Length: 361
Image 1: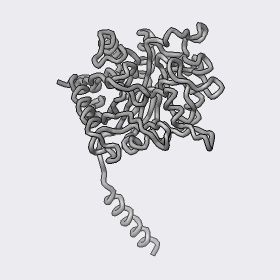
Image 2: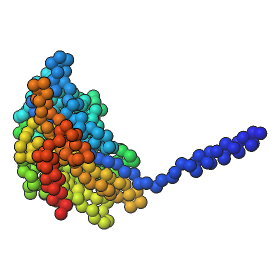
Image 3: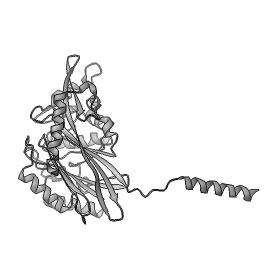
Image 4: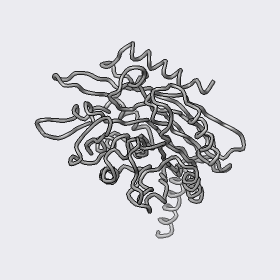
């Protein structure tokens, strides 16, 4: 009886394993990236509840949250310190926003925020440290600014779906606000030697794909300048696979390179535009969500850009019980909420797609 029972178990197990489909599907990961997240004072004020005496910003992102739920990794450029209430909440020219912004970004799906930009030092050394402390509080990974030299020496690596993505971030400057002379590691400035060292470390760690968020370019210009093109070429030559541009506050074109024999498909979006800001007019209230599907070709040791698409976004301003409010609206029919549908805004979204895709012609 025991032998017969064991035979039955073996047979059943065999049937179970046969029923489980085997797959040789290559590892894939979907990465979504947005541009500048800027908290001008009116946006900060819009999130304040005088009854609870607390801030809440999640309502700004309710329309884009379902989009981010489809991503394995969501990245954005945080262009405002979260230095704490004692530093005083402020907008342009020296930003400081409540830490509840980080709470909202984590809640809607962000995994990584880059912090190297011209506003990194707006609240000084303490502001840099407090910002990173608050991002840690809400389990948001970060790179671009650092509390210690040890932190600076280890570039960020995100492991998702069997794919290791290295993410580095740099800025052209800090608006003339000095970085402490004894702590030059606090903010990543565009510097060839530093970038080469970061890329060397990432390659030694055997990452599959390297992305760089670079704060560069001319504000409000819809096409890249010569400096952007030169830095992009240099970054790719050094080993960066995808360059993610921020700073111009308007969207600039996308370019993709798929070459046989290369370790990976590469690309650049010269500027992702504003994801959130109080700027308006002349395309400053538009941005994009860059949507990349990366596929790991294990056999040939390369990464393929399986899908590349963009979703235009618009920062809507509206009145609610006499108070100005903000909401980020995706401008594609698949995602548009009928309550916010506006032919004029939608038409601009279509023009934005055409503009971004100019680089693919």
